[in-house]
Image (cartoon, rainbow, N blue to C red; front, side, top):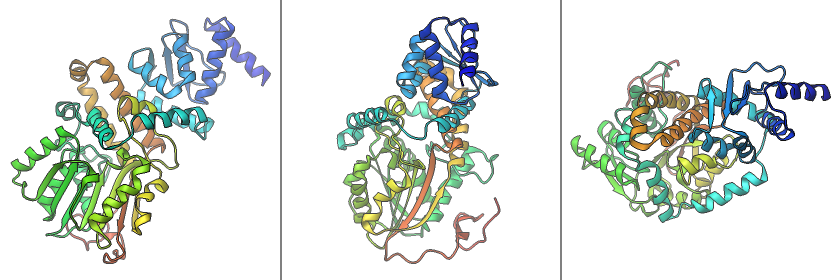
Length: 426
């Protein structure tokens, strides 16, 4: 161990670092990032590479102050440093983050107390009250439909797609995802569906147009609701797909089915029982539902940098946390699936389109905004690839709903409505 420390010190000195403070900061940084194949450079100095490491990436810090800030608050300071151009990554950003996440998993199996306290403080500041939720949603989804048109698919679907193979185009995979959700819900013509958090309305319109159901969709993003209403009118679906600008907590009426794609992440954990109550009063014991959400394999605080710069008020629950929505109301869990590899592929498409429009995005919103969103998308791909993020779909039903199918064959149909076909091979 002593020989290793001396060898590392020699590497630091050869890179031009001579003071005790400089050596300590770099030593601590390498301990923090673990065995990642990364070299570090500060200012105009040569990069430092630990003994035995073959670097695939180099992280360039503007100065030692930036290094110190990252050591004090790694995630937030790195994100802000990258956004402001004080940190640069030489090499593919997504691949670097993937290597970093894998390395951090080896050296840090938990979250420190100080980080948890700061996360709890962020939770309080961004609480998803009725008023707070509007502010949080407005900060993300009301950035302007023009922005999202630049990198989403043609139907503006902002949730995980479903790929029968990696080569399937994004537009086709999003339609496949919507059909997959409908098959999981076993929708029948004439039924009524409640959708909580409907985005730009693609799923609600798809259900109404292709499955003969009537949908009430709730959302508190003004721009998304306005877009969805206009699109439904153009498709002559206004009487079958109704878009309501209101909070899920204010839902009234009874329905056959409940569906939510990408909304649970915007519900505070202390409100899970309340959400379960809304579901129960809407579909009772005879209905069924589906929750589709970004989750974690274990309970951890959600990224403070993402909550600060991208998704205020967000939380990615573990499965155990998510089931707190359903268990108090005796709902049966019929199916759970993790689609994280599909979400990794989805965001790969988004990032590719985002990068093609990067100059336009920088012109419209500024370079720091563009860099923050680029980091967010790249980090999401890395998170889903390494398993630090999951994409769960939970299908559930009330005690009086008809029994579940004997097999999952109905989910893998070549025809979107056929519920008796045999499974296909993926």
